[in-house]
Image (cartoon, rainbow, N blue to C red; front, top):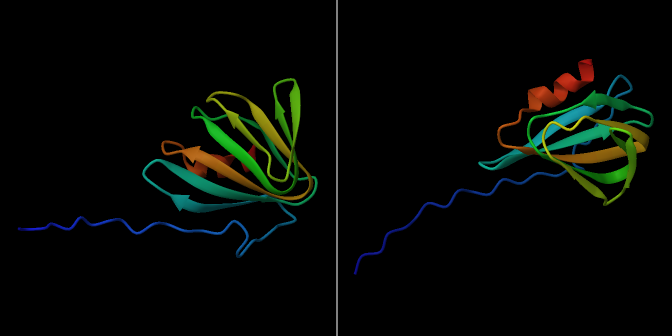
Length: 123
């Protein structure tokens, strides 16, 4: 009897808290994972920092890991405290403002780019 072995890809790991940095100039966007199906991004906000209104053609999920974020969608405002999450379809305008020092997890579609997210800072 002959057995074949299948190569199993080594899992990717990352920490949203290790090597965490904040900046007085702007939010800090750090890519953490890039898999075949999506991307995980850490966004570190100092209190009062904003990611101005923007959109992506892909769906996103945003989760506050630490702190509190004011998340604006059109005329609606949602307060995302620690552990709270929001999901948006593509092409929905939204804005984020840190109500206090915050760490956010942004889950992107595989087709989206970290460069697009960083480009929001120049709006």
